Image (cartoon, rainbow, N blue to C red; front, top):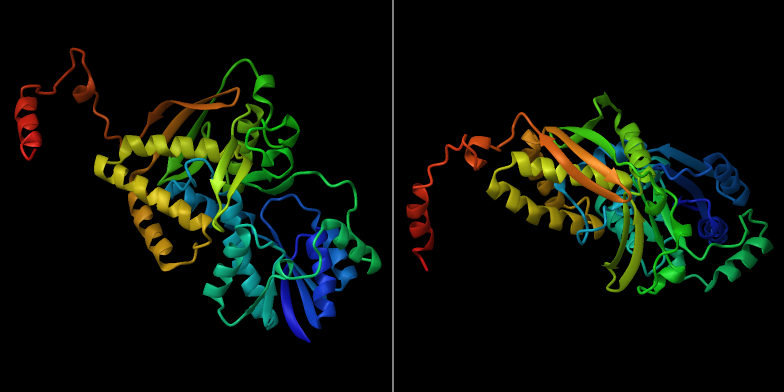
Length: 387
């Protein structure tokens, strides 16, 4: 029997996939990545073994996810189409990388996933895997198998005694990890409809949030957040703390129509309190410490970096080269940003850095002014001379 490593979630699709692949004469190894989605891994491990998996891997990747994926994207200022903080997109190359490692350890000849042919994740998984291990066969049964509806899958599961959760299905499709949550389908497929409050889990209704603003200070070292209100946090704990603070103030809700990689537009709702706070603060700190030309060029890099992450090109040469450039740009992105969180808004109200390029004596219009305004006339003549 050929060995295949299946990216297993414990849900209906991948539970059916274990039996389906086994019926196709594969020895199925189930692999689960813990990126902070809060799954009941022990229950799903038992389910996988009962369904026919020969072995189950459960890997805790939360720390690696934050430090090697979330933080590099933060330093790059990567926000897809100016709104999406890439929580799901960032987790996929990490999951795929370790799926390949498990396959190599087990001497498997193939890897499989439960993505459909309509979304972005199939690309992120497969492109990453092909770059890292081009010899592995890639299986995507949901694009080709005989089941057309969820009901058909449930019937298949019942016929084969596959343990699944058969409670009433929510009309929404969601994905969650410790950095953020995405929601789609149901009434959200009509871009004119306002999202119902029932879809939100990480954020409070802004109308019901505290009537007094919450002030927090986030301290950065070389582009990475390290402290909240003078308290130092380990990377995963810092994300969790910002999610808690931001979520309690309704911060981090995003409603957007985005351009999927496969060519269709999709209405997506995101919750990302930590991402909203960190990116807002990081941008403001960069504005304080980077010179004008670097800052303006960084904007171009940020947009391209976000595209490459969204498109599943995390492991490509250009993306790694951009990481090196971003790392150089972040050498002096050190300092503290004060933010005001209030009923869904996240506003910067203060910033300071030992590398600040702000000079009050040049910027002021008061009696401390040391700017020689007589120089402006010659500057303007030279500036406009080519035209």
